[in-house]
Length: 195
Image 1: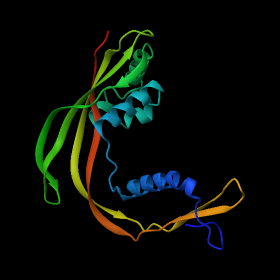
Image 2 (image 1 turned 60 degrees about the horizontal axis):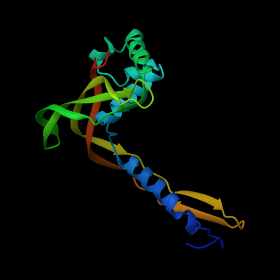
Image 3 (image 1 turned 90 degrees about the vertical axis):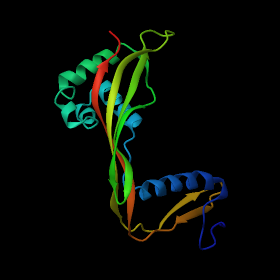
Image 4 (image 1 turned 180 degrees about the horizontal axis):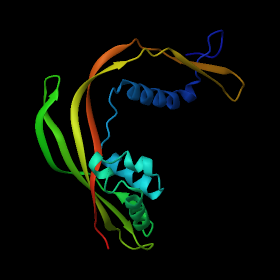
């Protein structure tokens, strides 16, 4: 990589920043199935409830849960209870049970997992956190075939403090198919822990 002489490249001081973003984008592009890990699903449900975003809250629930806790009144009750707490956190999702079976494409293993995650917070500043809710999540595991479209080469140009342009190009990739591991999770039940 060298400064602009007809073919400018990225200044070395910017490499790490751009390489990290490039690595992240390639990782995301390579993932045929975006995993909805149980912890992230529980966090998204809590955040949606806190902000009163019903559609986003419902998108984190199983079909059965949508008809009970996924109503506007159900979400509002959760939101109102969470509003009495500060420092909200969702604890690590703990495996409660699993069911073995055919995951597809010759893979045998867990096809259904049930997790629980504790939502905790403090009622006043300095008070120790207490459990507020227990979220029970159902996760389906499978291997599926995905098509990945062609990715074109992309280039970015930056100008350094001396006014010299530096360009960095990332190579593209051809279209391809892959078989990827998928874990799709949703909140199945929410139990109140604190009164």
